[in-house]
Length: 166
Image 1 (cartoon, one colour):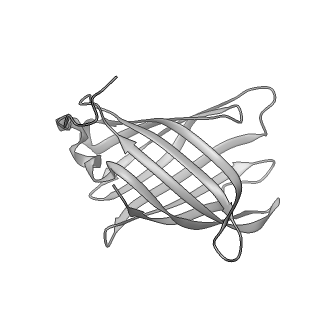
Image 2: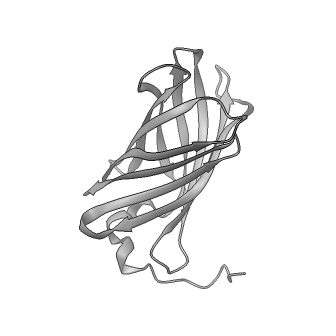
């Protein structure tokens, strides 16, 4: 177990994505052809332990019209692994029985990802591909996610704006 008071130096390979490190909170919108549009809150945490990867955890919850939490939505966790020439690999696991490997590129403070591999358990919903776009805009983390699922091609699903809180 790591001592929370000890500052671990950021591995040099993380330089292109070091802007992500910390905890981010905010809200966004979602929808898909198979569901009604919704508002959600989100918390993302990017951490590091001195090795050449970031740990990642995202939690979302449904918001009512007044911005109050109604119930938990999706959660995902994984690792972001920078590669040479500003390439990146992202590994994500979902408690719904889906595991994804994304590949992509980091250009300044913009990260574009697309699924390379999607694996599902027998009980998971049909999901075949995703693309994600992350960017630092005026100090806030903006992201958008398109997915191909339940017979639909890549279609806009969720997007949010998050503020760094730690």
